[in-house]
Length: 253
Image (tube, rainbow, N blue to C red; front, side):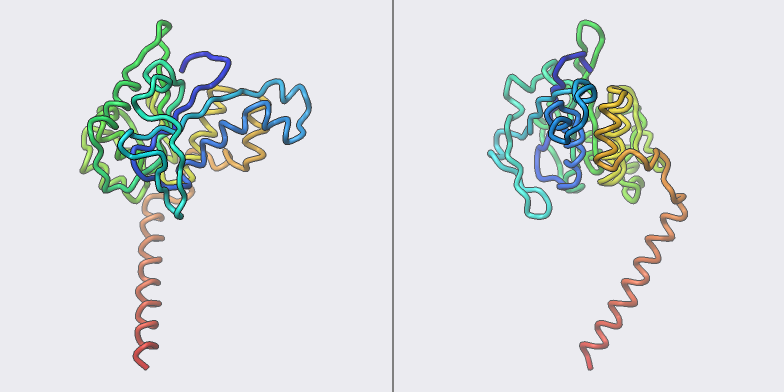
């Protein structure tokens, strides 16, 4: 990541995405002096704020608005062809999760590849932060090859089969490997971005923003073991079958 007075961030959405997967972007916005001042924090703390420029990036053929889950619409502010979001112009790219069955074309994948490969004169790179099923986009692009990565815990076995050249980690909420950060399902992305902010911009402003957001306290380890997680899912499925059978019987009466 380049050392700049203003953090330049791109939220890359080449198709639809999970609304909650985009939510970590607001943690960066909460670091701004304007936001900290609006929260009526003391001037010395506000002075430590970090302004940011956030672009919402789509593919040209997808139009000006993208449909997210919960019937939300995201307004696209830049496309992959715009000069402001080319390699060297962004410090951070956030990739929220799409439908895991999505298959992306060359334009979307090349956008990630060129940013992942870019190096500045001082050796700095673009930090790519991936939430939940965003791992499928990164996997298709090839930028995870040979790296450690995380994804939605229940989908890690499927990710392993689809992208066997990646070392998939299923016991961590997020994984950092070089400039690429990947997270488990949905709100684990918030924890990942909280950890990223603490690493890159440590200090009172970061801690104040994360405290106000109520994130960053879960830790990198999952509370349940993998076997415990599997048993939890099996129990929910068993209960669903039981409830479903009771519902059918009531309808038959």
